[in-house]
Length: 254
Image (cartoon, rainbow, N blue to C red; front, side):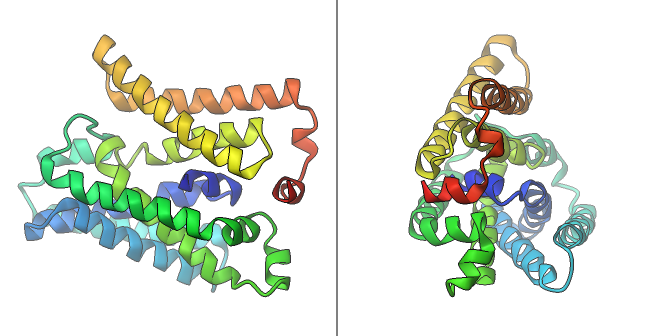
């Protein structure tokens, strides 16, 4: 659901940078003996707020890059202080779908409810701000405030999904299925629902493929996400030639 807005806003780099920054939070939580998801959540939100702050003073891509390298540097420092953290690095980088412990289930459920509720509550204004920011600003909507809300939603989604699909694959799951949905339909609500369904199917197929072939789940998540995008672009170019010429504003109006 959050990935739909990531694609709509062209913020794939943000979806890649925030998880990398959250990785430092996992290292900090492990160092202090706290729940990993707590560390992920705190550092994800801090990283998102840092990106939002830097965006106001410079270019978007530069702000994201600066936040990314800063958080990675901090994560490297924290990892160097904790010699017991190494066994968890692989699972947090590449995910461990079947390795989630009981202590992570309830926090994950709470984060999922918060993210879904946030998307539903902010859907219409966030859609307008994301698709046509100039019109939204002219209508008096606080564009920057909604931009910050979007970044926080990305941060919370990162905290929810990083232990499952890993820091290196979150952005593929948050970009591939939503990009497919945006390619095959211009209706926002339908694209949002289709994005969630395709992402869920992707995870199910990845688990089945990993079980059958004994390959990493992350391989299937990344490959299927890229395949969905390719299929969506092919479908849009062949059977919906109008789609590529339609701006986001008419899609919003529909």
